[in-house]
Image (cartoon, rainbow, N blue to C red; front, top):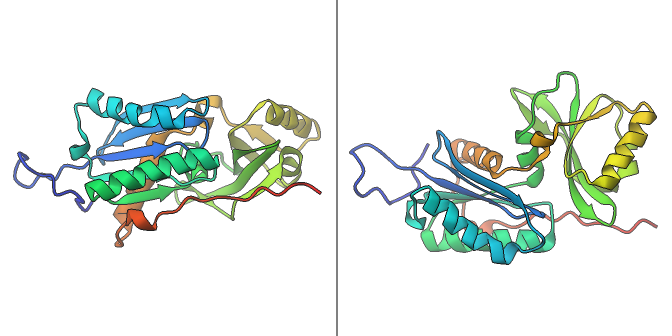
Length: 243
């Protein structure tokens, strides 16, 4: 992988250090990760009660300190661009863009849905339905299909309620992402109607920045373009009121 950093002092000849910080504040699930291109070096994921502003910067400093690193050791950044909470996205994207500009680092944007899909197992013969809460009993959902060893998005994310989501499933599928009590109840009703949908185990439903980092590394390796932080924008999916 191209070394994006000029910080190579005191390193052995031919060795190019790499360290990517991944930031996800798109919903009440916040997550950070450090990846050195070969190994996931550190990761922290937690639920916040809308305290993104107060918790994010201190958590980054602690993660770096516990890993024996400083800001100057970073060579790339990745951030969740949504969909998700307007406030949460604004805080995470703004901080990531500020850091990237100040440190002159590339910034890769990854969607919350792609991050969730990257953490899922392969379910043979089934689609993967990925959801993020949109508020007021609605979810933002996208369908993925397995291809060439990974889950690939098959369409733009759509905002809908739980009932509409389950009624749209026309074949075997697994559900992952933000499943609240209302979603669990709707899932049981759908399964009672013989809609062929199953719930992914809870550990795989948690959105983790380690997978955000993994997706960002793939983009850095595959793209010949720069990742200008000034050009990165959040992804918002509008929620329309039901008539």
